Length: 130
Image 1 (cartoon, rainbow, N blue to C red):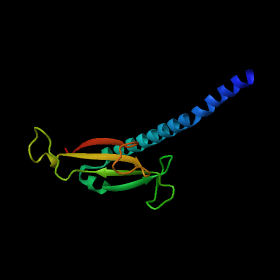
Image 2 (image 1 turned 180 degrees about the horizontal axis):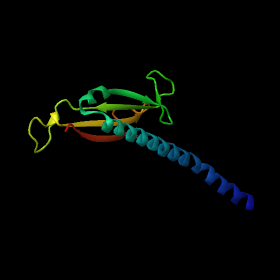
Image 3 (image 1 turned 60 degrees about the horizontal axis):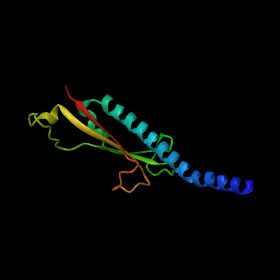
Image 4 (image 1 turned 135 degrees about the vertical axis):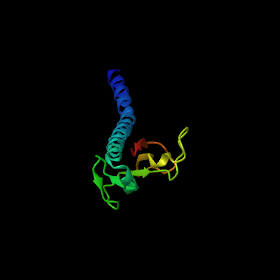
């Protein structure tokens, strides 16, 4: 009887391991993506207003958040800078984009389909030119 009880308890513990491991992986992934997004948002804020267009494009990062080359096998995350060409700001004059710029930083795992938001982290930064 005791052996049966022990095997049932062990089976229950072993059955919950995959769930715990996948939750741990998802948590680590979101944490790394958030740290990359925060770092890139800081880069946007420290870039002069006239040089914001130099940030456009995609950057690649390893699992632990280190920047890697585009074709690298270590590339786990991709970070994309998006700047709307003619943003409209409610209540602002039409020339507001010469003094205010919106930059979106999106970090996502490369294994993610582009239409899926699972695992994506996004930061929106407003930068003033004055």
